[in-house]
Image (cartoon, rainbow, N blue to C red; front, side):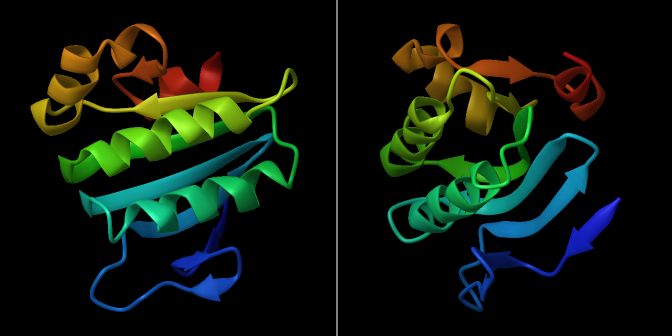
Length: 126
């Protein structure tokens, strides 16, 4: 597993407001690890990290949201944008277990649109 320090598109993330805590290559998948709050300040970091991951043309881009404490409407928009940017050869898989993520996804109906998995192993296996 290739691990890179927290950065967005090769640019170090903003200290104190990092949402992207790491980007790793797992075979033909790229995993974007997130932690903290995804809000108007941090959602652009997630969008930039997913955009950079998509440039590698992986089979799967997995966003690990298990350590995210809050998902605002800007965060939901970032997930929708990430989903929209994936092409026919790349799938976006999100990993979420807590109500901080699952509740807003369910309330907005996005749980039926976005691929959401309870564990990374399941997200990377499909």
